[in-house]
Length: 127
Image (tube, rainbow, N blue to C red; front, side, top):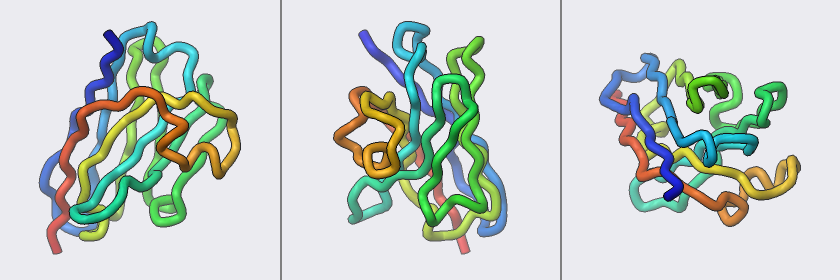
């Protein structure tokens, strides 16, 4: 069974930092592009970031590009999202997911192009 498990969420004050992790089985992890999405209360799921198989290419949503960093450690079957300078509007459930499309901006940001999803981890940023 395909499983992706997020961790590292929590409560943090505005301006603070968190690092999220996503761990999966080797069969799920290799050799796929992986991404992070988030869903704020009452809003649709939104793209956060994606990373290529070797980690040499990344792509970020406009709202997080200068504050978040996506990375991966293939030996550990783990992907990370380092979130700095957090804002209240970053409050959401964060999901990791496996990509099934081409490396193209409109495809990377489309949830329908991701075939497996974790259950999410809650990030709450207080003001």
